[in-house]
Image (cartoon, helix red, strand yellow):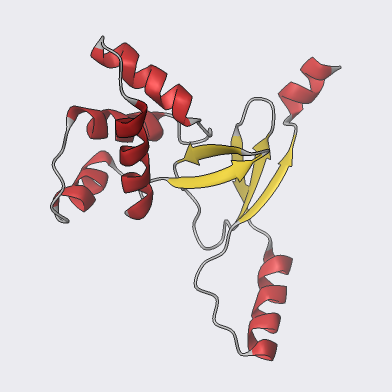
Length: 145
């Protein structure tokens, strides 16, 4: 998703394009393969603005971006992480490094086949799915020894 598309989602729904919202969107576009905590986002905004960003405003804007599908949120070990959703329908699985928080997307055709079978058998209609696998990427495995 491009910056203009993200900004348009906000303006067409009556939201102003504040400095912080634009900075947040740019941050996630530039870090599309990594999860960020709200604290990291706040530190980035504070650094850019040259003044302390409020946690309340940062959280409000993060959840606003989640509402419009610009970013997504997940939880791991009791902490919330935000990331830019890049998955297509064919890339339904995320491998997330628990050390560096790098994200790799890939397809799992067997999972999709199984899901279709179960959907049909139980008369469910899947609206959305999220499949996350946590572990260490090759670089972090080597660094860990």
